[in-house]
Image (cartoon, rainbow, N blue to C red; front, side):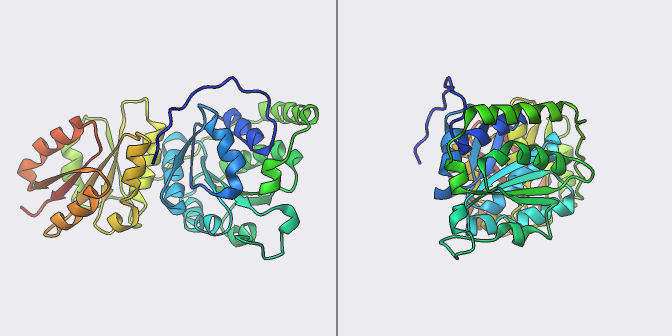
Length: 338
């Protein structure tokens, strides 16, 4: 994949729906968007590419993008924002939306949709994601006109963070994203919604803790005082992207996000180590493994991540010291039976 140097451009006033959404995200202090690409959302992706903020982190799977957003929300208290395309891209977010609702964490899911003129016609990659997600979200909305965007975004962020935090979904048809703006009318609407926002009191979201297995005690004791924060989930495939979201939030801080993995996490989320390397996300990973440690080492090395195998508690301190000093992505495989 080609890497492109991000530049700050002198941007004109928003000209279409995608640029307007990008400006709204910036006004709500959204500095990272997690998701996956698709043709329907190209106007919004183009607008994000022209800005320094928000930054788009492209995950290997939409479910992992949701986990990254949850990690970001967990450590900042701000809604994690997910951006995916229509059809299967949108439906792949359903497990992540369910987690956000169960864990009571604020998340904004932006899904692409077919043009408003094609709704209900069984068009290519059309899915009624507002209907599918209705039992799981606090609120969902199909945006049918570009003039609705400022008010809809204000309501979405308010609902996601007020009362019991939870997920909100906005379905964005491609003709709304590409629609041209009436700048005078849009400026008036934005001014109106800004005035309403100034009267609103922000509400903090609370990140619930998670119980960790017994082998984590060895790691926690060895990493005491290093600024590392350990992330673990009993749900396979969640811990690594969740920790990546936290690492994005802590990019300029001393805290270090560490994903504590079981072997079942590797087949589901190991490729996100490639995402971390490509986007220079400062993530660390530790895998708990036994006799099959060389097998999982091969899996991880395939993601261009260096692997260190530590056998026994007596060697853990030295292994972790080298692991912490490494600048490139390094995964520690820990066998605590010795």
